[in-house]
Length: 640
Image 1 (cartoon, rainbow, N blue to C red):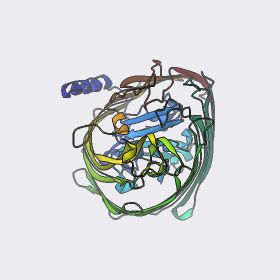
Image 2 (cartoon, rainbow, N blue to C red):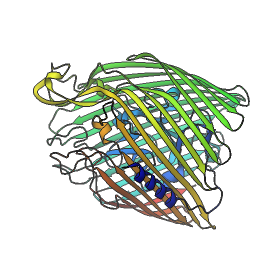
Image 3 (cartoon, one colour):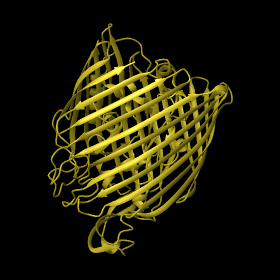
Image 4 (cartoon, helix red, strand yellow):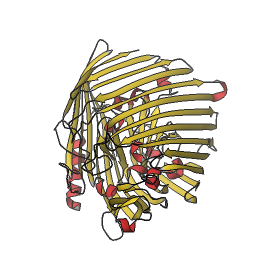
């Protein structure tokens, strides 16, 4: 797309989206992901998108990955529907370069980034999702190369403690044998709470090559919290997640692939906080256990991978003066795998970090972060970050420069490494170097009126030692002891240095027309381009990321009736489908819609929902064909 056509399309997007009329609303909510301390988004120096509980409740989506697919600036490459599996990409990186965090605790899986979308939380427990775009390793540690998805739960927030206890239940039958169920209850006192959530997504699925695209995914989450005297509070959370789904061509392009997969995991989290007048101590501990069982064919011997990961972070926030805050902390991460396919391995990581935030005269906020990391693979490395924001009244000018880092996961290092004979497919590489990147961005945000905000950002990320899968002849493989000489292989490799640059334009608004009509909307466009020094677009995963995306969401309500519509258009490099009936779609347009009617003091709701309303046949990744139009409906009961 030429520059003049890009500019023209941006003008159309902005003109079509801005229709400011209505009442005041807060367009700058409090966030915590910018530098771990509470700030308004305009003060962080970063492009941060906020998804509120109300958006999660109303948007036409069955799972969190389907919801994120329509958020401006996020690309979700689905391999299967309704939580079966998705890759999350921000600013054109790979799916391992996005860090998922729940209440400050890391969630990323050490086996593969394909499992990072398995988020063990009930949607009704979420207060908001904060999406930080761009490098954040200096604050959050490794993997935060493309961005961070930080899920903030209701925990001890006053607005929920004042609401008292509640119960919610939902049933959702639909086409293709679909029957989803959900239950959430929260018992709330003045100084404590207990919540329990359960949900299941289940369907026979669409017909595929010799099988059906079935899925049966369910999770159970228990959370409890207590506020004690002298500023102490404790949060405990545990989750059990069970997923079984068709995985045909999720990982290979073989015509013989009729795979299915089971991923069972459990997760535990402890957050201890002590708040004083001028300081806050946070102790965050997390543990995750996962077992992945993958059958290439029903009769084949499955790959069985068992992983464990543990994280501990301690940080203290000091308010040194009325204008300066200092955060100092330490983080430790331990990973382990026991596998018949990848072997047995352990990995250690630790880091110390310091963050200063200064509120200067003339509405200037400056934040400097420095992190020293030691990793079992790459040893010591320094990771700096500098954020700047100037925010007089309705305008914000911001910039950020920072380094980020990511080490290879267990799949990239050891896939197919422990098998007796490998006849083809992806092969790990234990000698991989870590990915390192520098991110530079500049943005201007404007509150055009009391109800409309526009964010525009240009960015450039230069990364070295990018890890991806490269087709490699048998003779060029570094290790051939268990490889078939006639096989076709893709080796995990540090393929090149890569420069990714792009433009983001995000718009959002909230309008109230009289006492009955209410409209909330968001629209965003992204242009991306990734190149190697010789000017080519490299590798499998980088060549599949979108070069242009336009995401929109619109929610209209009147009294007890609401309509929500989400849409996505994206274009990317074309890939040859080969033996498949559909390859990676060069461009496609998706639209989801939901109509809901509430009854009896909003305690009961009936809804109907359509996914892929245009019945588009598409694939985000080669061979993983997504369903066409899919109707469902249901009943929601909410008691307070």
